[in-house]
Length: 137
Image (cartoon, rainbow, N blue to C red; front, top):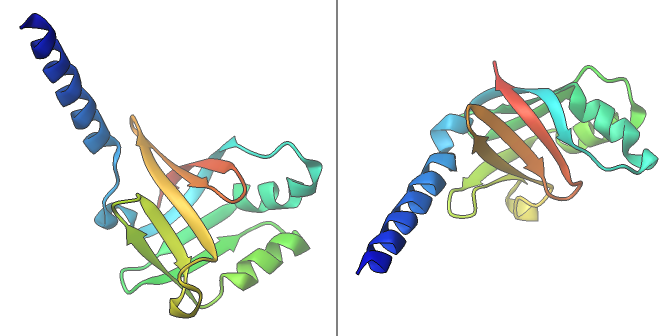
């Protein structure tokens, strides 16, 4: 009987922890600035992207518009921000995934996995393997 009780307590604790680490759509709205790069690719080809994202601001508007801006002067990152022009976002709460794009591309231009880690909010870009600690403006 003690084992069943212990398993039940561990299960309840893990579910509670999981619920606290999840993000809801209302928390996403607004402007987010990259505070720190937590994870980045080691390949030097990615250096302009890493620099661009390191100086980036993500804007998630309530009407679904998305904007990506940076103070980086990297021509490569300028192509990324241009690709993000006139895009929208939607949040898949089940997958905990912010999808960037539009109806025509199935919101597939970029995917961001937001995550709470204690008092920190992290954005993970699955395609590039980059993760950022974010700060809401």
